[in-house]
Image (cartoon, rainbow, N blue to C red; front, side):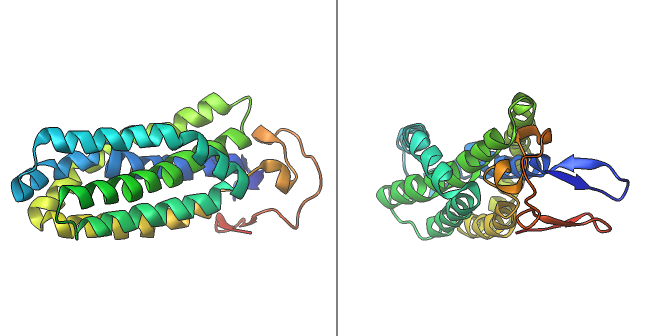
Length: 229
């Protein structure tokens, strides 16, 4: 979907989806994929859990993501990336907050796998991926590459998370991360759109299918802002 900027440059709406996906993947990489290592020693020191036990929980969470990947893709395709991204981020954020209340390896495993990992896979990984796939065909590789590069950038958040643990404590830090995930992630979900055809355009923004001005996200040209439908 082309969007006019103040300079007259027309930007395909799919690239706004790529931008939102970049940030979502950065949150996923920073808060979960790479960043949770910042809490590893806190769990070992406070609860006396072995490194093998903790590594086993992390491995199961990655396995869960792989198994539920096709199901997540189906749900995003059925209900749309916006709804599933909101749901996933709400679950993931709640998982971080619930981690502040754990007192055993069993409760940690349940919260981490069923909330943090599941919510992250659904909201920050699957939903953006399906949206980009729907909005791009010829430029899909470029769009996906730009979006996924957010995962690498997420690694830069690890020192910040470690600082939060040292400055406060790990229980306070996970609460702060859960709230930050809601504050940043939920607005990103409203950028998502399911298929360009629903707004009168084809993937890559090359061909207009029909006049669907009533369904297009409206853009205030002077302010460069997007009013979501």
